[in-house]
Image (tube, rainbow, N blue to C red; front, side, top):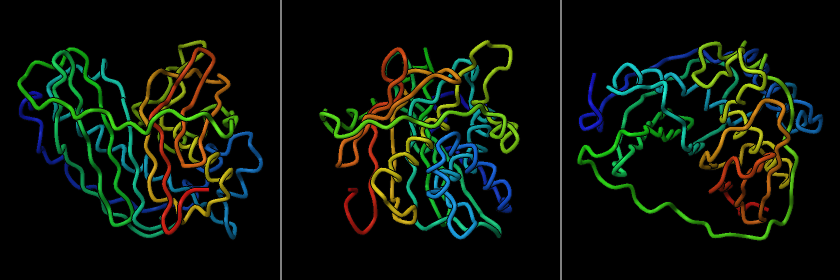
Length: 260
């Protein structure tokens, strides 16, 4: 296992998966939740069209990180994600992915591990927060990209649903809620995906034109907690829950034309 100092540049390997329309359908149904109008967004010609399916496809690299890294992974948290679509996902065939750790940032007390997964259809960057992992002499993280504050142009309620379908699709998901908790944590990537669907629906944006979406994870949301997306017409957004901001620094960009 590599210490944080030597983790930058580590190759996390290759993964080849067969895309399954049934699993993509399960995923799309879970993301749509109780928001009936989302079905029109996510199903086109009877087939699921959900760009964020790239996220569960990429999670294998997070498991490989646990094997490669010398730190207590039970204390780590997903701090952010950026998903860039190169072309729409097909609903069948084989998909090849490569994973690596481009850089590990040293904040002094903590560390931020950048995990990258690339394929011909998408690239995904996960940022993993490692508490008390800093001080190893690594590079300081760049200033957080700021999109500035905006007075929300719209507020969208996010879909509600439990994660039973999600567990069926991704039974080994590292963010799966603990069934022993009375109100388990909703996986952040579900919140992220539901935010994407709400934005696509609001902007009437064809899913094929989703180019990139990113956000930082600020606080966990509990399963069943009412969440709302506060967005600006230029693509910026935050997600709020009962106790405040859950996700911030959000930005959705579209190909060919500006969002909105």
